[in-house]
Amino acid sequence: MTPQISPELRQAIDECKGQPVYVVDAERQKMYVLLSAELYDCIRGLLGDDDVTPDDFLPATVAALRDLLDAPGMEKYDDYNAHRPLR
Image 1 (tube, one colour):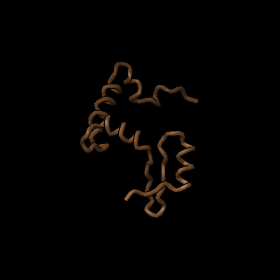
Image 2: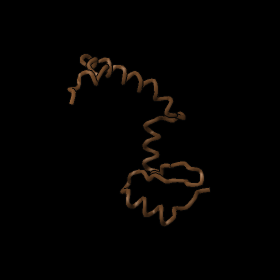
Image 3: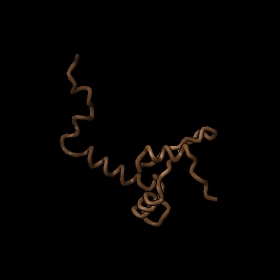
Image 4: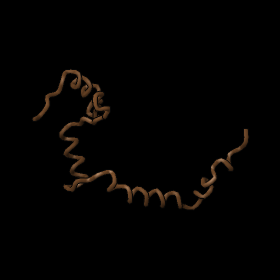
């Protein structure tokens, strides 16, 4: 089954000018993202054919942040408030 776009959703799509549209299901208290098939296909192409979840990106994200936070000079942010002038 392929649901049809309602006039309300079509207006939201037009107002978002090609950007994803956030849709709320008040009954289930969930939010969904509506995007064009072209954009979806592009995103799927970037991610590959495997089923990818946000958890798959966690190790790379943690590693990238660790490298950034361990960079020279970043130790001054370990105790950020100690370096701030008193008011």
